Amino acid sequence: TTRLSKEKVKITKEQQALMKVVVEAYNRHQIPQDVAKKLLQEQYSEEENFLLLTEMATSQVQVLVEFTKNIPGFLSLNHEDQIALLKGSAVEAMFLRSAQVFSRKMPNGHTEVLEERIRKSGISEEFMTPMFNFYKSIGELHMMQEEQALLTAIAILTPDRPYVKDQQAVERLQEPMLDVLRKLCVLQHPQEPQYFARLLGRLTELRTLNHYHAEMLTSWRMNDHKFTPLLCEIWDVE
Ligand SMILES: C[C@]12CC[C@H]3[C@@H](CC=C4C=C(C(=O)O)CC[C@@]43C)[C@@H]1CC[C@@H]2C(=O)c1ccc(O)cc1
Image 1 (cartoon, rainbow, N blue to C red):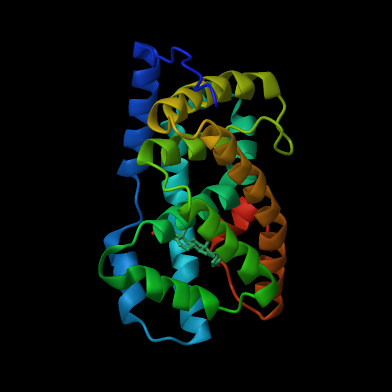
Image 2: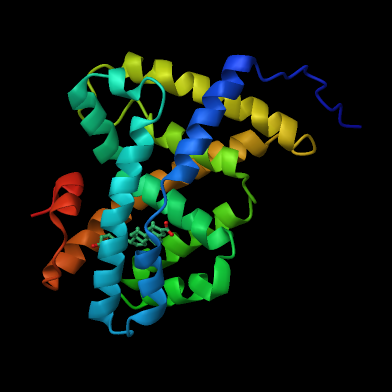
């Protein structure tokens, strides 16, 4: 018989407070409704789809910056390191976000329209498959919003991003997030002791998407697609 680990797991007061700040920040920053509404209105050319996704990506980067500024301790990091963390995690945060959007059935069929537009926006098949596989693997976890918010903060606070100077300082911020996420998983999924490990496994899968994403940007550029200044800055294109 499997012995259920009756490990006494308790989330402390300060861990509750940390989680509250991160979850509120995560929920507060959403892309503006008018952008989401365009998804349903604009016509379906490849060009139009790319422009819509570019607008959504640009808006999502702004949302990401606001969310990150609310992560306790982030603003006290070395400024260059703050930029290095944002640039290093932008793609992952976006794919986590879009995975959550796809796994939560969005109101009035946005999800289908969004998927349709992504599939017809000039992204090559070889990237489409891993992207939608990732969406499926996140969807199967049925993550709670607390887990989504913490996992996004943990991805942003990855110490070994390129050009991060003070990795220890980033580790000191990431560890408490990992601790509270681990406890949350034990408390919310007592029947699934491996749930926390599965969540972290998604972060590893996310990293592989970084590589595909760079290819995606290159192929768009080859077909003379234009990005916004903010996207050029965060992804060092053009
Ligand atoms: C990541 C992405 C841009 C951002 C989109 C995501 C699909 C769904 C989303 C849902 C959002 C919400 O409902 O809050 C916010 C925007 C995001 C997260 C797109 C899939 C591919 C695209 C992309 O990589 C891309 C990159 C550069 C571009 O110029 C255009 C697209």
